[in-house]
Amino acid sequence: MKKIVFIILGLYMSFGMAFAQDTETEKPKDRPIRAPFESGILIDNQTTVVPSKKTLEMHIQHRFGLIKSSGASDLWGIYAPSANTRMGLNYSITDDIMLGYGITRKNMYNEFQAKWTFLKQTRKNTIPITLTVYGNMAINGQSDDVFGDDYAFADRMSYFGQFIAGRKFNEWFSLELNASFTHFNSVISTEANITGYEHDVIGLGGHMRFKFSPQSSILIMYTTPLNIQSMHENTNVMNAWKSNFGIAYEVATSTHAFQIFISTADGIVPQDIYMYNEADLSETEFRFGFNITRLWNF
Image (cartoon, rainbow, N blue to C red; front, side, top):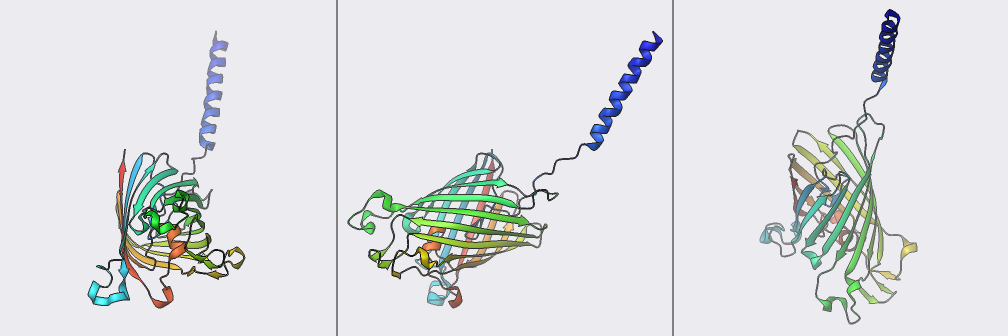
């Protein structure tokens, strides 16, 4: 009987020691970093940020007129008739996938969008960067007359796709770079294949955040379309190929983000900026603008 008791005790102690060793050697999981930005948009750029699952995100984006166009007569663009506004709602169906809709005053663009952050930087640097893909489809809501005699509904459509790579270097500095492709089914043209806008544009850009307090940051953004001669459809290309630059001050809480800035482009829908922006950074053609983000968790 004593032998049986000793055997049971011996087995119990052996299993206990083995379990303890397994527990000691088990490594904690490397979790994703906290969000590198406070919002899914940074001035005119998309960021890699997707709010947590079952979050409704509202955006109000506004661009005033050119600051130097009429001076004090329109309060440096604030009361200019060329102001542009976008209102949009996004919903996160998972922690990594967002779907959304927005409508913009310029050309009455109705825009459907999606964003997927498929790789996230981790806190112990097991994964050093975050990777995201973003895409939208916009429908130009202007009257049929704008599209000419051979109008078809497909002429209203434009598309934008973007790849974003970013890294949060520390709590005060984050950087992201992007590459994009824009396509318009119908563009302005005075003579087919001779003089007109290009249907396709490739673009590059980036943005960064300098966070100097728990709620405040300085944001900088730059994007540019690439004038690639081998892609030209027309002999005389009407595209202005102007870059878009912006610098902002941001105040954010857990559910709100407010950005006030100066930037060059009057567009808000990204394909419109890459295709039609004519504001010249070298001529300091800036305008005031602001973005408001509000989150609701369900």
